[in-house]
Image (cartoon, rainbow, N blue to C red; front, top):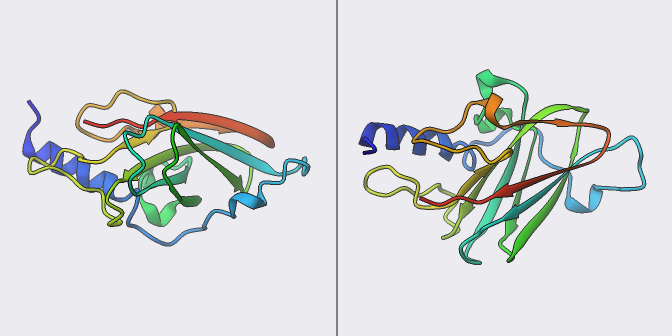
Length: 161
């Protein structure tokens, strides 16, 4: 059984995916220039949205466990309308290295990660490497991915409780 305190903790941490500001913002999707061999491009494909309501926020985090899921430390973020069966996004990153991808399906478009009365997420979420989650968000080591110069593709399955 999920305790209320664990559910509330997970909801608070996941809320950082959407609400916290600051940091660098993503370059527009159009700025992914496949003819530029020096660009570090992370292409994200999201599947599994249960409807076309609202939008999906995709956030890229640096390889920094201390600030993982803290929106103030994000590298890039895009908020995109939901399209089925998948959403595609492209991010131009500052350099090759390790990053983590986190996302949230804001179904009612209220810019808040909604939870149930028990504190369990009421909206969808996803992370790079699609980790299995038990009450709390994943650790950075579970979701970090290598990103090289050129094109890099990560596929993420949206999850719902």
